[in-house]
Length: 378
Image 1: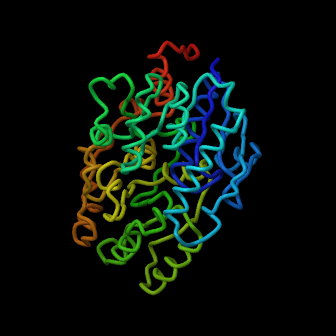
Image 2: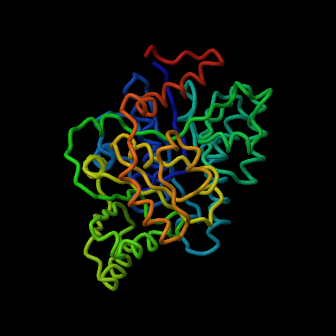
């Protein structure tokens, strides 16, 4: 058994895909016998250190330690200078946790999504794995300095990110490319498919801006899609209310909003659907080039035919040859993609099971083992 400390500048519970991914990784680490502690800042009014609340919110029964650390810093308290306050608060909180904290000192190794936690632990020659999910100039600098520690490792979400940070050559044993995954336990169910049911699952905003859901709604009002029913799963609730008003104005009868559903109900919704939508705004470079959406792997596990906006990142996804692509904000292209799914097949379960979170976690532990640290026998 290894003692793993997952330290992150995220919030729990939260509707975001990144919080779900972190919890899913932790669940699998616990399932294979590790002693895991989750540490995060108390920077949101709905955050909690109660494991029972997290278990209910994310639908799991495993136990791990939850360490919610004080966050007397500006980010999350004011709605101005958000970018500056985020970076300053993130830096100061991470510095305080590593320099002044003591709970982390009994860990065998660490996993983080925080650039600054990665940097400070690397400076202390700890064995630490950083999950890299996007590109930034600050991250480029911190990552280069952190990898001078041979025990520092990076899990890149995509090959394009690994190339962007030029982690190759002398650092090749310090990184691995691992996309997102899915929780296999949620999708081992027999659920009857509903003909022509189309689904979009996920947070409806990314970094506070639209994922072009309005475009999808407007297009579903077209007469050619009247026989298809669209289910939109996710929040935030205030934005859902805005979208419902838009649907009412359009007079559409084939669009339903469920709001956020728990993981079990979300899985059932996906399993009952026939088509899944991947869409995002073209305003963010990480969406265009580097994303590996959690929902995509859940769509695969649900046996969905998939339509996706024509981004470079989507084309590089596993089984990308089965995706029907549409041009961003192009109504005719999107309608054609939905209608064309009738001609597409879905990959058999034996093909996509390698993308379960269990397999993902095993590969993360193998990355740590390169320095001689043995994870538990699997």
